[in-house]
Length: 256
Image (cartoon, rainbow, N blue to C red; front, side, top):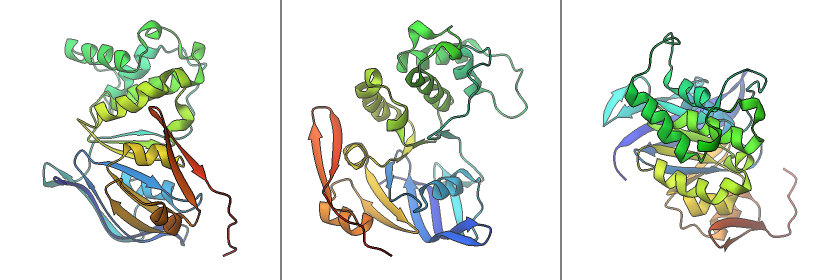
């Protein structure tokens, strides 16, 4: 599978003394494409916060590696499920994407020609050439999310985290988006969190099911029986052209 990039060992995490994740063990590999699935409230967002370094574990440890060497942190691009960008702010598509190259206290740094070329490259990747100088307040929701995705990848992160990508991909961009993820994965590892099991299974290399504990499945060739056991819902997976879908069979949840 290549070199280890992120390693969680016996991690327990939560908030104000309440445990949300318990005894989590997980390895994210270089150029991995990890799908994270699980029920609402199962701890998927908490796991992302631990990986991002926003939530220290109550117990256990998380380690980061770059080219096999232990490091304090990695470049991580993150696109949350919901964004709070102020659409009234007078800033263009190009400027938002460019802001992904600005870090820390270097807010007023000048940009080299190579960085300007990188901005143009990402704008083209996102299919935003016609909107490059348009104010973000004049974009559709799907167009804005493409801008934010561009900002998250422009610095060529070691890891890109996408939280429910189906919620911010417009139909016009959908098929290209899935191809784009494969392209990004040639440079960066990806963690994709999604309720859309069909999409997840069709895209990823490995799968983790999170529901307080974590069950890891190497490879994406998983059976409906494994999904039903880990998610506690009967699952059927179907494909439709280039766009994957999923269907949940009729079922009742048992009271816990």
